Length: 105
Ligand SMILES: [Zn+2]
Image (cartoon, rainbow, N blue to C red; front, side):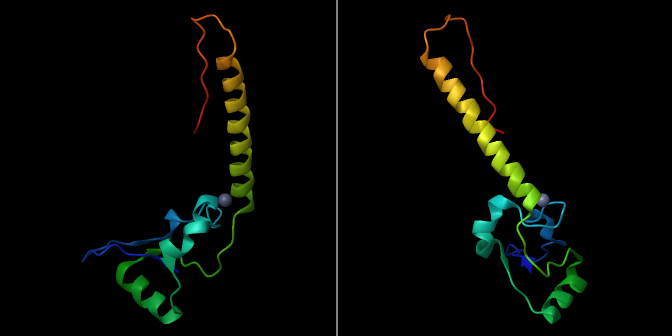
């Protein structure tokens, strides 16, 4: 697989790390749009493109990274918990000088 090149005459080196985590698994939030990000190539075409442009890595097997998936699920739960607390406190009668904040990153 190779990430799709933009329609440039000199697209630069191949960089498949934009769709992979450091563990070489698929990033959870990119799995659903995989068909828009990359296309499967024959080994022969991959070798031609890789020799012409360099870069990589070659992706022979696509798999969802379990560690990244668990991390994303934990972040979602944390954000939901913070949002619930934020809503509860912001709806309550509080000192008007109180500031409530939550992290969405
Ligand atoms: Zn990962």
